[in-house]
Image (tube, rainbow, N blue to C red; front, side):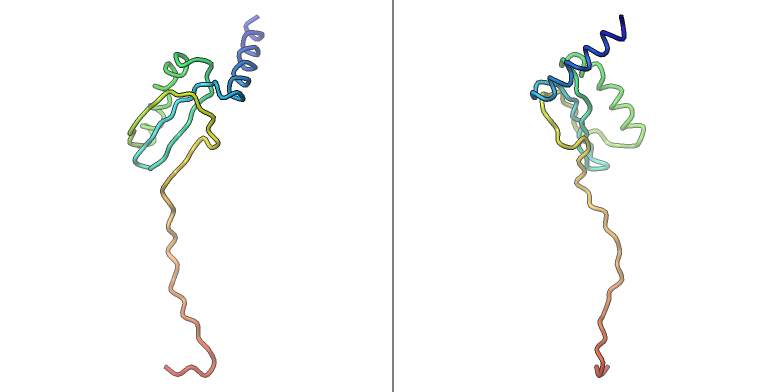
Length: 101
């Protein structure tokens, strides 16, 4: 019986997500500068109850939490980071034949 409830809930959650009615936990961090989405959830109460675990996980990875919000949305990406990884590249100077130094 419990398995039937779980499957039914999962179906409803997927339908709500498809319709844009599902709730998500949005967590914005400063270090790293990222926005994370956790969900989907059928209700704001369910999302609110789950957010403490997500905060704990991110803080365990030394992330600095800026904001936490429960909202209805359809995120395209579950993790969005603003920081670009800079790769040091050696300066290349082309040498042409016949070039005098």
